[in-house]
Structures are given as C-alpha cells and as structure tokens.
Image (cartoon, rainbow, N blue to C red; front, side):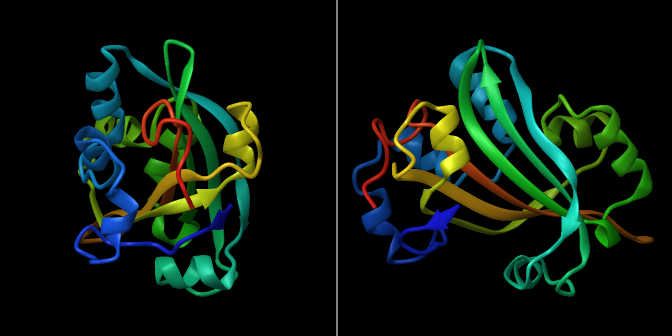
Length: 193
C-alpha cells in the first residue's frame, strides 16, 4: 500500500482538500470513531461478514513499530480481511497487533473467530475499545484494487488508527488498523490523488 497525499487528522486544515468532493455520509464514515461494522450494517441494511484474505505472524517494520509505539521487529499478528455485505466488498482492512500488546484470551478468540470482524469479536468478549490517532488519506492498494477488479494504480480513500484497550494488568489489545474503502462506499470511481 502506498500513501499518495499524506495522512490527515480530522482537525487538520489540510483535510479540506481531501474531503472537498465527498458527500456528508462519506465524510462521517471516513472519520467515524464508532464501530465500522455496525455503521456498515446500518448503511446497507445487511449483516456484515468477513472474507479472510490472510492471517499470520511477522515482525513489524520500523515505521509500523513507530506508529504503534513498540520496538522495531516486534512480533505481530497480521490480518487482512474484507468486510462484505450481501456479497459486496465494502472495506479492506489490514490489522497489525503486536503480540506483546495482545491478551492470550483475545488472541484465542481472534484465532477461533477469524471469519468475524475484529470489533464484533471484541464486543462478544465484553471488551470495550477506543481509537486514537485517527487519520485519513488517499492510497494505492494493489490488494484492494485487484479484488475490486480495478486498475492497480487506482486511488482509494483510506484511514488508519490505533484500536486499543489497556487494563490494570496490561494490554488487552493494541492494534494498528488501516481501512481502505471501496468506491461503493466512498469516492464513487475512486479518489483523486
């Protein structure tokens, strides 16, 4: 995935250009701090499921580790999914969870429920979570474009954030989540990058 125009926070003056051609509901989705799964279900009127592309482990790059506030080369769970409603791919999500920031019970739940959205897995375990460092931008994402049968050079709207819950005994979960929106949701025929 390559970033085309920089990441912008909801309060950034530079976000005006990013948002200028979007409809109100598209802007809300891009900067929503709520459950994306729930919002997509409300928007489509259909249940949102996961189409798992990949799940495994790897070491974090320096840039990924810096974003998460952990040591470079830390081992992490990596997950790539599509959020899908009635067979329509709506949102490509890439998640990195440092293993040192993941409770064993949460890891077990994620392994056992790999076909469920991350937020739904956490909610089913009674785990509240928050988001920080929410930023939006325009990206090129070969995986998303290919799956959507678009030109791999297509520009798409995306956002990234840290999803977290830290309890008295340490991290329950801390994850870097990057979400790439299908033009079905944001941007019509793609973003202008």
